[in-house]
Length: 116
Image 1 (tube, helix red, strand yellow):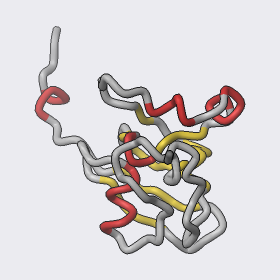
Image 2: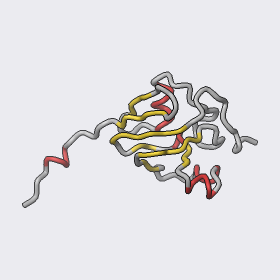
Image 3: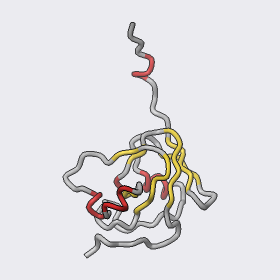
Image 4: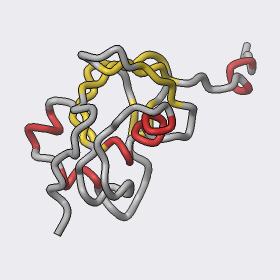
């Protein structure tokens, strides 16, 4: 027997806690992590907002997400060690719901390693 209730269930926002601060915010389905933080007045480090500078890097401590399909690969801005430790490019990373904890240098300019 197949039940269809979950097919029409509205996706829930992701609740994000910023480690080491009192900062929490919600990410609506379909919104990237950095945009939601900025909308919530979190002083998230950023510059280009399109995944080319790397200044919005954050480490995902707990929670799940993904990068959408794109001709650009934001992970090229990360070392293999950073990727293995859970670091992502927040302006291109979309949470998949539930609770999440992140570590980011709030209020800093960020490392613009992708800028020429």
